[in-house]
Length: 442
Ligand SMILES: *Cc1c(COP(=O)(O)O)cnc(C)c1O
Image 1: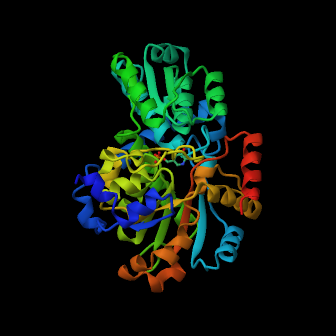
Image 2: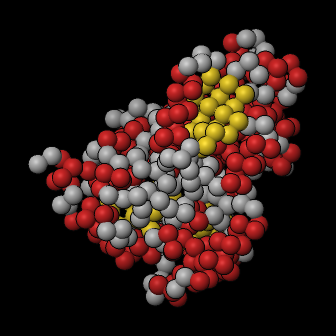
């Protein structure tokens, strides 16, 4: 019997195959001190990324006026959601002890999703490298000089390609076109029409495929291989994307301090992150672990139809197994999460760092979307709600974890952060359809 057939008999895999919601605790999690020695990336790498984003801030502020107030920092608010907390407690008959906050990456400037972190960062890094090499820029310069005909003409000699289900394409497309690059976004069948239209309106070359995300990535990679001036943003294994996301943790630490929220031995932090290929939630988890070590507990959330990271970690097969191989269709309304196979880089990095993972039914994404809109007036896209039930599931199904880590008696001091990963760019009509759908589901 081969390995895959054996896994098909595993009780948790059987549940995954039956499209049931699951909650999984990672048996391989290690203490941070011991895990960090084995990792291929380090705190200096994240600091380097943070500094690069600071160098680019004057440019960003100049070309994206919506970032002016934040001086060119692409950052989102961290807000309390007390009415949502009450609503969840009533609906699930389960108190949520501690603080409940929402990290509003749904409202990140420029591309309205978490991809405005990693995606933009990777393109900026590539642009910086080219400009430095060709003497257009020094690291001491005010980078707003990149907003010039000369620089745009220079970047027009180069192209950028990416494969995407939508949001990564938006962020890479928008920043690349702004700098002057030729940019192609290879989009999978599930990408929304409005995203394609928006990109085309910004002179981005959008290429559509009948197949899923892996196919779009493959085509993008092929295009880039044939053209030495083409740079491929590889969502399945990019370190730069990962580091761009990791910077979020450093910023979050400041926001927590500003709000006088303590994270330490007796004040645990729980973070619930929607996961697609893994770069965004993985990068943020890595950053948070660097800062808060064993006092932060990160959980990933995936749709029941696309539990790729969970399957990769659970089986230890990482990117060598896809959800299709256990009979799942990888079809979900959750943009960005319809990924059948996890990132090779990220699944390996997460093995000793991630606390656990859970899946959520698509219907619940819509009911939660409506619930959050009604309770707090915040409109997120369906994917961004994937982590919302984390605090409830943790208490109902993760008791073992709480006990094993002496957390049970500290839960009154806990902070729970739901990472809201996208939504503000969704056209109103589309959002209203989501909202209405949330009202029709029981
Ligand atoms: C891309 C995306 C995610 C997940 O990020 P990955 O890097 O693919 O794991 C979550 N939510 C939204 C809205 C996204 O666009």
